[in-house]
Image (cartoon, rainbow, N blue to C red):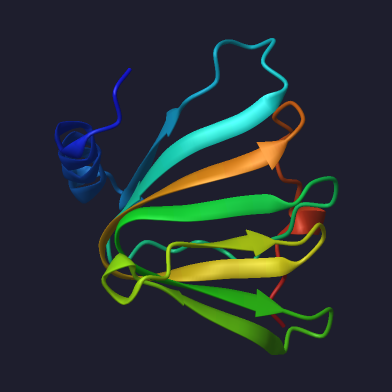
Length: 131
């Protein structure tokens, strides 16, 4: 599969009509693939809850658009803000293991997300519970 403008356009079009305002495309070679790789097409207005990954770091690379990745400490206080924008030469960020994070989508955007190990769904313990 070639990752090109046509594919990104198609994913963004699907995200625009999706209730969640985002869609992803699994890039693994099958269920036995022990890495996590996906394209995530995001439209402004999508809600990505503050969450963490307790067993792996996460690499986020922006292929198109403009997003801001936000990091939070254990008390829910913002402790990092990374404005990803290829026009400004900022393409990605490494999210450390266990770091609470989310992102804000400023314009239609496509990111590639990569994590170690086989896919493990996030549990409710890994989604920030607002008080």
